Image (cartoon, rainbow, N blue to C red; front, side):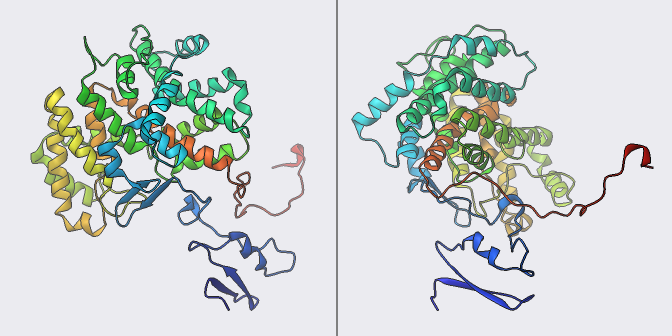
Length: 427
């Protein structure tokens, strides 16, 4: 018997099967051999939220939550955040390697050449009222691009796929900025392809003041985009893969991913952190607030993570960036509360024993607020940063011969067959 197998005995029937082990997984379809009756469907795995189910093989992002490790294509996030630009990281995620200097120059130019959006898309964005949530507007904008670019349906044409990737990366910031400006009742600002990606975005948002975008703020924006660029098979990425598995075009798939990100359990966490810090109000109130957390009266937002059971490596980087931003924008009382809250929680065995550490959302919202972004735009910024990761996962899916259309099973607990009762006979 091979050591790279798992032997399972069904105690209902005494049947024993042997399944191969590869990458610490077994093929789930092999469990179908186990049947209590010959006409049974066969054994399945029940896994709400897919907490222990691998749906794909990927080479894009590695996360080790127990050790607090995040790597894109093998490169530590700390090094990429220190040395790279966002578009360079996008290239890495999409193509698997860091670009040479000439490749990066060409790549930057190709993305920035796609920053103009179609007039009909501008007109669509103007139809939304000032109270429309930016994430709902973004979903609509990306879905509309599916209609604007019918060639995107050719998902098995590699050259065509790259054309859509460039369009999405180039046009998302412009659509977001145009919608934001309309929301404020201000005119659209055209993109400037001579600027860097983040410089151009802040320029179009109207956050450059009277002159050029401050390089510290542009760099902070770049780093935040890098930190959000991909994070393995999270809720929105899984949604994108499920949609794309039906050969839907990338705009529909990305719109679905944005919809998943819209939920407060995924993309709205940094907004919740800001509201929590504002509620605390003063560092002197932290002990009482933590007592309320331990009494399960309130939640400690920005701490803990579905994957990380150690300090989120992105949180340390964001904390450093926060102070650099405040040197430009001025101090923020919330950062003082956040730092002291973090220190108090990490000295409290209640939180340490539960492995509750700050995640990337704990400090990112404070930075966005200091830069002038309203809280409702925070998840849109998350989506903009996550776009290259979504697209890299989409490209990987399109090239994966093992993938099939997503079709999870269920455990049916409803009624068995019942006779139909006519309307006049129902009590």
